[in-house]
Length: 447
Image (cartoon, rainbow, N blue to C red; front, side):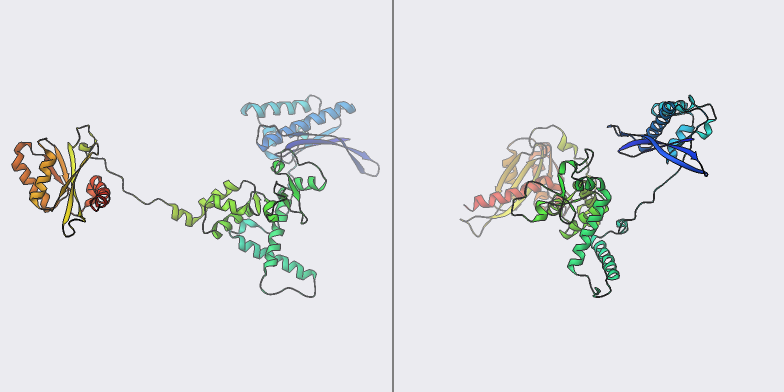
């Protein structure tokens, strides 16, 4: 007589079962399932190896329960089987070197078996690595980067299958729209069966969707083509059937290809535009996050949205950032020419003064760019006050005015600084105001 316990786990829960193997006549054995138990995974998410360790602990408890219930002696061979190597290494290792969670369950699992068994426990714990062969999908979507190519390849595969089944009227030539549409529906059908198999089985059996399912709040149903769709509240509207009941697409490679196709079809539209257009036919789980990922991977969008290279901006001069009375630091520049309706043949100019610290503004109207008119405008502006520094456009009128002002005011004359020739951006803090003044002054003089 032998006892064989099996423990396993998944992200949704962990379980264990015990089989009794009895030798009968003619060198044959009879195997019977004695008990089995399952537990839901904790609400707090833990790793899969820890869940497998909890499955091993449940298996040890179940084996001990069967031995006590059947009053089996120590001559009965006991084996525990599992398909995980990480938990096995934890069980066989030193518990003092592990964290509290692993160490406590390891000690309990080994104690449950060793307390009731007198024979050697190397035959007590065994590991059987059994890995199921996953079912191959219709097409490996990870090998494609374009939705159109996936649909065409799928359509050709389905055409080949159809031609193999039907000896007459074989389809040849280029693909038609109906074949591509059928390929899309077939892909969606297979993807839904691969991801939402439990939900589809529950709907076919008229049962409720499990609480842990991502489709729980979407109220899904199966249409006449057995595709998962959302019921919604627009059933009696005049919208299309796909808009009222969009097809559910799981988060994966197919959804990513679908979003990328729509993004390029809409000429690299933004996230909200792509989502709005896709929801007319599809409901993709986690669509917004997936759409942002597609936008970040789009090379054209990265080129278009990239920031231009710019030189680091130098700090402002000390005269412009220190506290001072208005117009202690002044910028000068001419605006114009301006024309007046009363004197259509005469040009007028505006000499603009702007404070470099508080950005105060003073305007003087002149009838020409000559030196006498410039000096008159400066004298009207100064009016007996003392100014320290002036930043001025470099033009012949201002160069000549510098020496005349120094001659008139002697040691009280302000300090003059000229910007570089043909570099008006050096005086941007008054050039920007010149544009505004020219626009406003022209309209006023024409009245």
